[in-house]
Image 1 (spheres, rainbow, N blue to C red):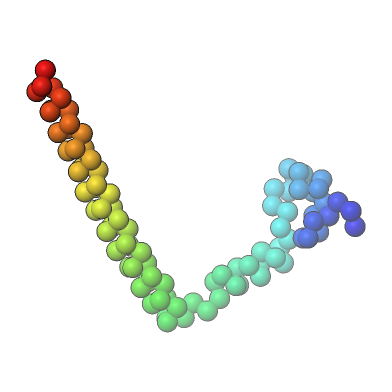
Image 2: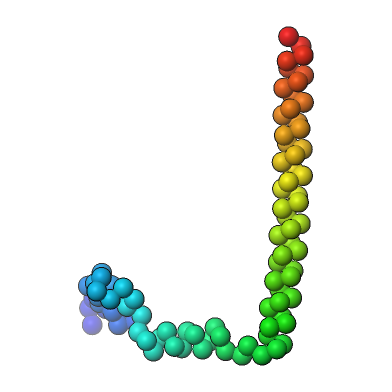
Length: 87
């Protein structure tokens, strides 16, 4: 049928502000079971391990950014001091 997208909502339905969420309830419940399914102790441990690794990478990256910014600032400061001392 012309004017309908893959989930059955027409163009007009997508712009109907009386229903801000055009996704059907059936699709919402399937989405939740897929994303929340499983959830056993092994899955929680894997997620926890993944978060620890991510945290470690983020901390390491933040340290590198801080060191790089510090070196960059020191370089600019040295260039400025050399320039002002010549005059």
